[in-house]
Length: 345
Image (cartoon, rainbow, N blue to C red):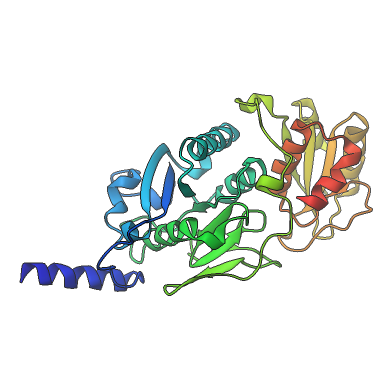
């Protein structure tokens, strides 16, 4: 009788968080998935950030999806995530895939605020076609309707799925599969925060199956030439700053970025992709001094048209344009080659 009650309780828990029934027998040959943990809300509890192993057993059925290995990299708030962490994460993932060729995919647990930036950096520098899936949550584990359990369960399913290969780095949340290049966090706390704007999600993660409907056309992972080989410190990457445009904005922040040693500046311009006249004057001076200038916009959707005075970021958000410019400069791309980079990546 106790065993029957335990089985019924597990079934109820699975159904209550939308995971379906627990499989009676795990597959004979399960895929191998490594979870690289960095902290964030998905690991939050009143006692602090938990290790993934501490709550993995609380997610019914996840052990039936894959043979899971855990690499506990960090336990930090995503607002503390830095370029140095990106470099170390990329190296950790590359080492894991090289040392364990049987690995089918990688899951990176991450805080929501910078998850899109980490995902895009990895999307540009990792030389693998195996799935690398970034996952986060909006509600910590003890809150009503916490979303971390379902998100992590789905992320492992996608990382283990053969159809996930070759799409670049992915972000899996809220039962959707997003491309690292396209996705951004748009809301402060609600679970539907992640959105891929004009281009939309790549696919869906439903209980009965995983479905991909499109694949990214931009260069990424194995097709990328923007490597960080030999780079182990953030100081080895060029400084790139973002300057925000607003009515009557002057050029002082641009001058400050140049004085601080910026080799590139991304402008979050008006939605049409333009700065103020005072900013334009300061940007022209900076460009003449050899600083690369990329024009994005603050509106969130749509692309900046090419053929303007400064290189268009296409439809990249300012924060992602910064990452691409940083890596392009680190790989020796000259100013006249930046437009092609932003059209390709």
